[in-house]
Amino acid sequence: MQTVTVSEQGQVIIPLDIRKQLGITPGCQLSFIIEGPNLRVEVNQRIQPTKPEEGYGLLVCKLPGERNLADFDVAHAMRDAK
Image (cartoon, rainbow, N blue to C red; front, side, top):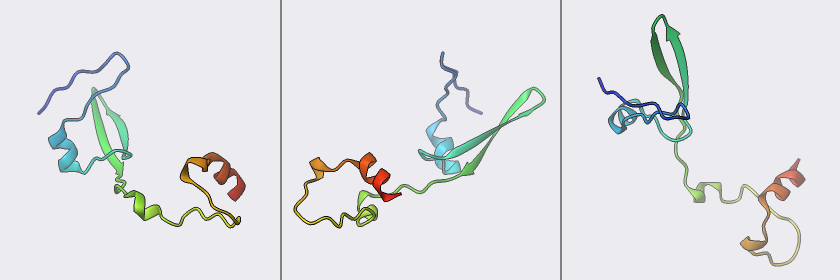
């Protein structure tokens, strides 16, 4: 059993060996269940890490002309896609 300390904001750090054993990665969803005086944590959803190149081609601009990444506004593009 490992003991951690709760921060002022109510946060705890799950020890690395436990995260590895349970496959907890950034973006995972956890459920907290109260069982009498105990707290049980369940891993609900494991999200596989992705690489930037896996998103290649998701956003397509059909306007003519040359564009630079610095000119690209993601929020604007997503608004226009709807």
